[in-house]
Every structure is written in C-alpha cells, then in structure tokens.
Image 1 (tube, rainbow, N blue to C red):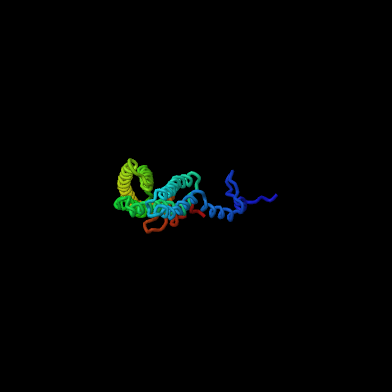
Image 2: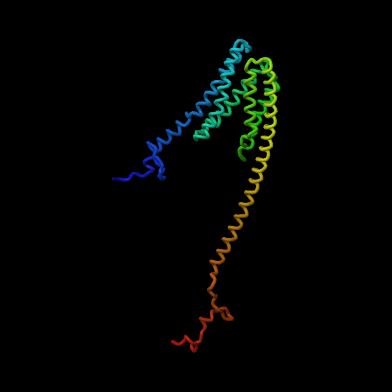
Amino acid sequence: MTQVPASAAGGSGAPGAKPVRGGKLGAAAMDQASLWNVANLLTMIRLLLVPGFVMLLLANGGYDPAWRSFAWAAFAIAMITDLFDGHLARTYNLVTDFGKIADPIADKAIMGAALICLSWLGDLPWWVTLVILGRELGITLLRFWVIRYGVIPASRGGKMKTLAQGTAVGMYVLALTGPLATLRFWVMAVAVVLTVVTGLDYVKQAVVLRRRGMAEAAVTPEVAGTSEAVVAAEAYEVSEATAAPQGVAAAPQGSDGSDVAETSEAGEPGAAK
C-alpha cells in the first residue's frame, strides 16, 4: 500500500498528532471558525447590551424604578459576561485578534454609557464620571505609548477597581433609598480612590518599562558593534595563519638572495650526477 506523506494528509507529522481533514483548507476553515467561539460571542452580547441598557435606563424619564430594575439586569449581565469571556479565552485557548480589540471596547462602552447616563440624570456628579473615564482613556493611550517596549500587565489593584466600579455603578442604576443610598455613595468613593491609585501605578509602570526598553535599545547597537569587531579580528588572525602555515620553514638564502639549494657545488653531497 502506498504511504501518504503526513503533510499531504493534513497532519503535522508529529507522533500522536491528529490529522486535520482537508489538509491546509481544513486548518484554514478551523481558524476562521475560531472567531465564533464562546468567548467572542459573550463579548458580542455585551456590545449589543449597551444600546439596550441605555434605552432601559432612560425609559419614562429615567426615574421609573421598574425600568431601572430592567436596566440593572442588563448591566449585571454585561458585567458577568465580562468575567467569563476572558477566563474562557485563556483557559481554552480561544484568544483571537477580534477578542483582543472588542473585549476592552465592550468593557469601556457599558461602563461609560452607565456613568454618562447617571450624570445626565443628576444621580452622579459629573466629576466622578470625568475622573473614571479620563483614567480609562489615559491608560489606553499609555499602553499604546509603551507598546513597542512591552505590555503593562493587569494588576490586582486594577481588578479590584473594576469590581468596585461595577458594584457602585450597579447600585446607582437601581432606585435605592435610605441606608442603601448612603452605602452606594461610600462604595463609589472606594471605586474612585482605587481608580486614581491604580492609574498612578500604571503610569509608574509605563515610565519604568519605557526607560528600560530605551536603555536596552541603546545597548544593543554597541554589543553588535563589539561582536563585529571581534569577528573581524578573528578573521584577520585566520587569514594570517593561512598565508604562513606554521611548521614550514623558509628556504635559506645566500648573500645575493639566491637560494642555497640552487648554488650547490658538484662536489657537495647530492650534486654528483
């Protein structure tokens, strides 16, 4: 029976590897289908919830407790999907370029829409909205500023900030009164403090990362130049050794520069014919 190469069968040739039906075309189809994985679908749902959340929150003048309860449900679903889509993508290797771009956009869209609507309704001071949104925009620009030198990882404080913001905004979306209305004020105060503190920490990390990257970039050409000089010196030594091999003595010459072997007398040993 004729053996079929692993590459032709669509497999990688590695032991235990399962061949993909259809070879390269099958692999390309799988790559395209990966866009519609569970993590990306959750991100798309969160994006679609943004306009629905705004309509529910502003329905009937924006002060109807029933409509605001529906708006809170939409906001809660968006926050829950935010927790799960990233975890699923990392756990099951579902990370895609679309997810990397759409996920942070969806996060900022739902949070920004909630903050702006609450400030417009008069429930939340505008300075709180400006501090939170300004921080998010600033950190995004900061990441682009240092992206050529590395990536600023998400810190534990950043995750606590996200949780505090989501909890506080969710409490403001609900039509709370009495002690719960006072509690949401303090929860929002904690969220604002974490927003500012973690923002300053990100700035510090970005400055350190950029300085280290610039220092490494400055050292690299010097190291490359030194390596080239060493290689050139070694090449010169090799060429010298090749031109005059060791162990081969030069032929002795006479006073007039002629070789002694050529001026030997007939009576000397080896000259008899």
